[in-house]
Image (tube, rainbow, N blue to C red; front, side, top):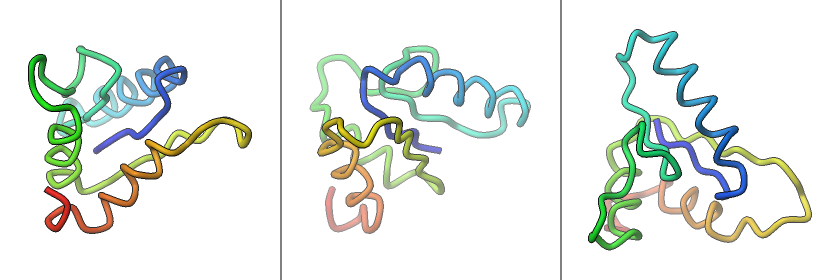
Length: 89
């Protein structure tokens, strides 16, 4: 599962990731770019490449959408890549 969220919503994303891991007995791999407690981009690597690869591995993308007036450009990019990650790597 890939959790797409704005950095300011990292607490919400981490709460969701924790819930998923706990209720599935750690059977679901969760990618949360804002938390080192879950799968996230590796230090020293290209962030966009790391995100694209994580999206390609994910069966589910969850968008944490909290406020209409905010900048969602990067999250929308992630959702777009998720529609066909093989062509975006």
